[in-house]
Length: 198
Image (cartoon, rainbow, N blue to C red):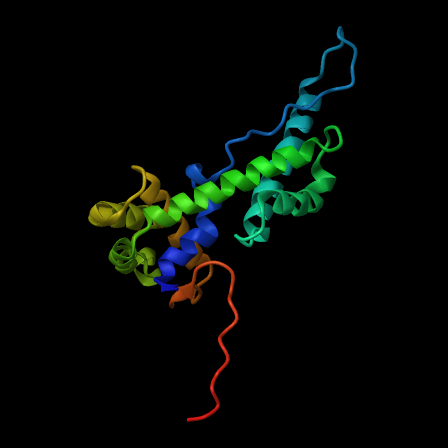
């Protein structure tokens, strides 16, 4: 299904910066092999938290990248687990459960974004986030103005539209020329055979 470029850019890139699309599971608590009376130093705790957060970020990114939308969550979770295995420092096999939760949450968030973003909203927002327009003001100003002017077409939560528009505007400034035409949502599908007779 062909849809507006803005709608695709959102589904492809906003999940990472939208609070609604981040996995709700936090980094798992890290067990430390010390005696009950020993204290964990602040630097050791900070290192453990950094490793746990690195795993969660990796798992969330790989979940979005590897999910084809057709396979079951367990299959995708196995692939996520393999991709982020070197960052996981807890007991064996616990990461599969966490990876499965992240895959399910990511799917729910993407489905929620697709329902929130309507074609009229994307068409309304488009003129406000052209690269030339953004350069004349700022990303934040363009996003706020677009969200205010197009609010009646948005079907998501309050404030979510500003986050989406901001992410797309930043992507356009960083990658000029990309995402300017109609794009297909989801994984590319093979084209049907062409009849050679004219």
